[in-house]
Length: 374
Image (tube, rainbow, N blue to C red; front, side, top):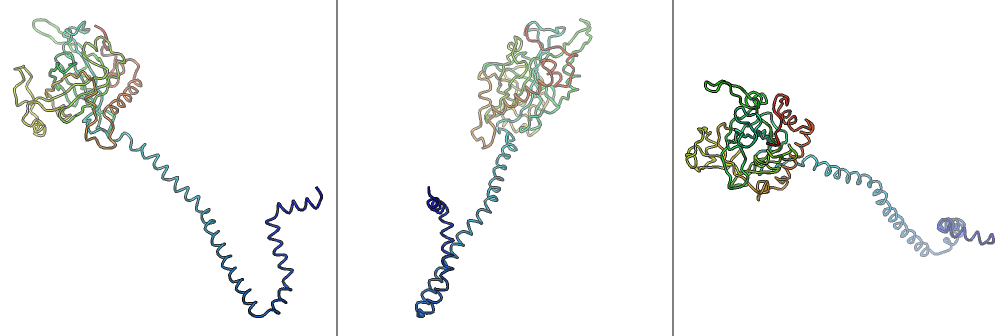
């Protein structure tokens, strides 16, 4: 390529800048000539050129006003991004602060449940259900329905029938033996065995209570009836004793409180019923039985009917029809509680008996181990 051709190519690449510069340069060179021509032209021609210059000025101002918004917009863009970022951060943190805080309205109470048995007099190691004097379950409720942390007080409920009902055909009475029991009360008046003297048989021995299972529970309502449902976390696999007692990995009972103003059903001999406060009496509505509420379980001597449920926890944990938006599903809530309990118990001990007694602030060395077989 010749120098002339290179110059032309170079000029083509810089065409916009060069063209703009050439125009101004030519205008400067021709300026004296234009002045002489303007003087020789008549006034009408000068006025036309003046009008043309005035027309061109608004165009230049318009071009400036068009670019100004562009510059302002570029400065405001970072602020807009910051404003968009703040709501995103807030929306991310809100679920974390409100999740799992609204318990299902169908759950009246939840907490930790323990199952124990006590052998007959002088029978430390029962070889069958017939060797069992009585079974018990302890309810250690949480501080509130929305909390998973249990309180330090327990209820002791005795089941004289020795086993737990499995189906709707099996229904028997239980008794609230002790309420508001502290850890020390459990050690002194429930867990420990004792010896006593009789005139005819001499020294007799009441065995210590044996732990048979531990887990979480919930007292739920379906409107017409109440349920006591549970999920076991200890032992991880049920043994012969647990199965013969009628326990399940996930189980439930329909629970009703007997109105003491009516005679016992079928002429059964029952201990003297308690005198309920007026608030609880209103729950009966002049009926023989009322769906059990947690307040009923806080009265010593209250008689609670247990009716087996073969469906496990399905019916007991059905979401209420009027469930509000944001409420947890009852079954999911109970399962989450079981997961928390399993981790908590594993932190106490890998041994079933040690973990249960440690959870009750007692030493496992002073009490019998869990019995899995007869």
